[in-house]
Image 1: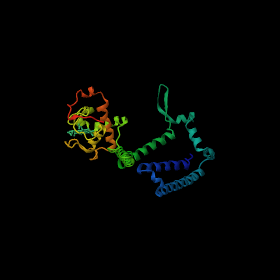
Image 2: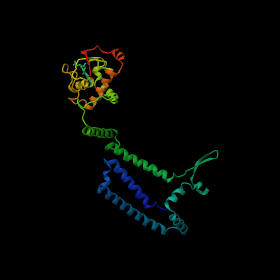
Image 3: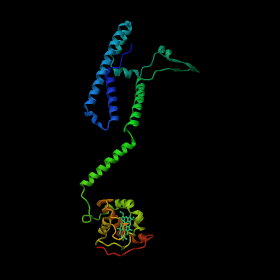
Image 4: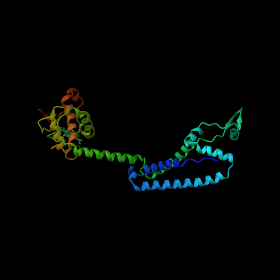
Length: 291
Ligand code: HEC
């Protein structure tokens, strides 16, 4: 007669599976606060205890009908702690007579094969894997659980929210407060590539829009070059609607404009003018003298 797996093992497994199901099917971990979750756990545990009591009754009935020898063996086994038994079962080898029973009938050249039963932990893991697979497939197909699109949307939403939060608290940059900083050049170049390259060409060499690397300017609205670029981004060109008021229409923020202006200032003033002139569009407007 075999001893049964103790109830606490079943309780751990069932509680674990319940938490796993809740993790998969609910949006966040707030189920921990829900009375529904705890009542469910309680019901599940009461059911386990009832099942265990039925098991006890059956075991007692069985116990009455076995031989004395088997009884001794059963009592001895029952007094060994569960984990000790589990540990031992991984290392015990069957006796010669046991081996005879499980010898498979197809030896060759003296090599024979035993039909050993698989270790319990292995079978447990196997069934757990199958159960998990079924629950996972169901969750993946019918809920948002582990869905790449849903996770992407959620992350994008959170990022946009955190950007909005940042914009709300960060001081705004306008033509009065904007300042040139060499730290902004690299970032400015990236924003320039996204918004301006289509007209002003790579590195501001000029195309539909004028060459931004030469000394000639069509629009001279401010005394300093940096502020003049900012002015253009804020107001657009009074002569040509192709150059839009990027800040006013909301395409870029004042902070972005501060960075782009740093970049254009850099390619106009700090880079070698000879290399800049090579392949660039012909100058337009008049020679500007900046402060
Ligand atoms: C759709 C095409 C187009 C786009 C996109 C564009 N521009 Fe322009 N830009 C122009 C044109 C055309 C002019 C010339 C306006 C004029 O004749 O007054 C101009 C003029 C300018 C000037 C003044 C040049 C001068 O000589 O007066 C600056 C500075 C400038 N753009 C910067 C930018 C920046 C920075 C961006 C990106 C945020 C940008 N532009 C995007 C077409 C464009």
